[in-house]
Each structure stands twice: as C-alpha cells, then as structure tokens.
Length: 205
Image 1 (cartoon, rainbow, N blue to C red):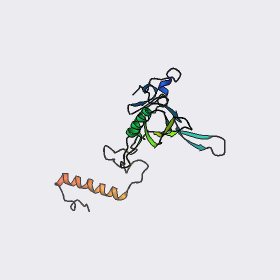
Image 2 (image 1 turned 30 degrees about the vertical axis):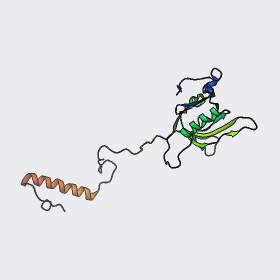
Image 3 (image 1 turned 120 degrees about the horizontal axis):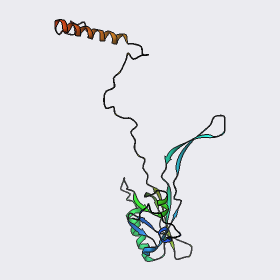
Image 4 (image 1 turned 90 degrees about the horizontal axis):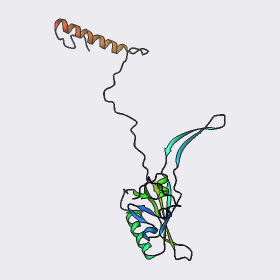
C-alpha cells in the first residue's frame, strides 16, 4: 500500500492518479490492468445552524466530520483487465448475502489520501457497461468512507459512594433525621457510661 502521507501530483505522476489499491490489490496502467477515475471524493463537515431571533445571521456550531460517499470507475478494454477486475470485485466489492457483518477494506488513491480517506465500504458494485460503440467498458463502484463514530461514555461510574450533606448551608434540616441522629448520639454516650445497650434500651425505635 503506498504511503498516504506522501503527496503525489497528477501532473508529475499521472499513473498514480489512474490507479487504485484496495486491500493490497492494485489496478492501473502500471499493471496493464486498465485504469480508474474517481468521482465526488471530499470531506463533508456537519454544522448546526440556528437562526438569530429578530435579526440577521445565525449561530453556527461545528459538529464534526461525516463519512463521504464517492465513486470509483474502472475502465476496461482487454481480457486481462476483466480478469483483474473480477478478482478484485470478488475479494472486496461483492458481499456475501448470508453475512450480517462486513469488514471495511483499506483503500489508497492520491485524491482520497488528500482528504484523509483510507478505508471504505461498498454501497453498490456495478457491472461493467460498454461505452457506446467503443470496445471499452466501465464498472462503477459506489462507496462510502468507513468512519465509525467513537463511542463516548457520558456517564462516569463514581469511584466512591456520594456522601449527602443534608445540613449544608442553605438547606432545610430534616426533623426526622435530626431526631434519629440525636438518639444515636445518646445511645453512644450511654454505652460509654454503662456498657452497650440494646436499641430498645437506648430509646431507638
């Protein structure tokens, strides 16, 4: 897999822009396996917009990135092109209907690397279609960037029990609680003076 951190200009290296690598499998002119074109790759962002009341403008809040859909067009015109296309499609584009879980695939194309796309899932694997009367076929694969949300736990489990301060300043004391606390303190004093008493002897309910 080429290094996605290395910028490749289509003017300097057009072969790289006509090639794609999916799960380590490359199709492009360098392999005499046809060439590819990329459509609609980008980096969409989510913004929440709330209109201002009684005035122009709006409050706009950035809410993160969204996975982007894009298309890969595979251009084929020889038996070898079709053979390689079929091998790649079977390995990475055609899903088993019996599976409930499908893993994303690694992908590299210079345009995808420029917007930070390195994994994808397939939405629709199109069959090769002949272009007019030319002996050239194009298979369009509709994809979406694989970009799962990172799960965050908004509720943290306390490391210790929370102590309630019912007599904190600004709070109304609970008479029943104060009475129970007074009885407990009285029982402690009696226990120190005459030995340990039963709850009934200490006046506890």
